[in-house]
Length: 342
Image (cartoon, rainbow, N blue to C red; front, side, top):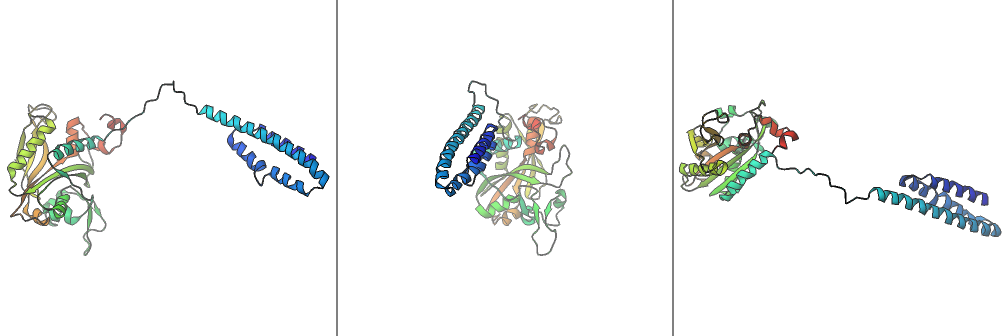
């Protein structure tokens, strides 16, 4: 037994002396010092010896256990001290720069407009991006056989034109939320509808399949075109300065009657003509008009009692004009070289 204890002691000390990291020390602990370890098993076997041999072996075993345990503690403390020393932070060293992110330029434009409209008493409305054909087209006066359907290449989800099935589309405009909001809140109603829309477009510098719009509606009694013009003039002045003027020109939109294109004096040249406005002095910014009676009816509103107007901005276009961006595809590129400029 004495020889066995001496060999085990030498083996344990050799292993401890070779320990270079906590993983090695953990293996030594499990192999020798654990309940089922070799040292524990030798100590258990002492009870099976004769009385004289048991007394002698017990003294040697206790002495050996004390020596290897002390050595184990020394190695463990040395390794832990080395680890703590390597993890010490020197507070006198200069700190490293931390890059801070910021809002996407489109989000900045959206928040700027939201601040303007909420200060005028508008609520922020929302609706699903995956929309039914009914709300995306029929409810806003674009039936299946309407020529305006050809103007919007659409992403259909599921099977199209199957009897008894509700066809789903990725919404092509935020106008689909008009009827949903009227159904939910009724009239009077005053709100803006920001959000993503989708078109099955061949992408180029001016066209993208995913972009942002912001629509606004007011529905109440005795609302007329003068109210629409006055609101858009105010919004233009808040966006581009107090000298900004508004020009409205007739344009067809199926969900408004009459409809118009809203153009503001160019903020870069103040209406004198430049490259940005193509030397016209005007920037085409907003589509607008009086909400069509059929759209009001679809929302459960009596057009003989209530009238309203709607207007819409393309947030991508607004941002491109503001910062002189010449490729719409940059917004969805995720390129930090582009995004870090804003």
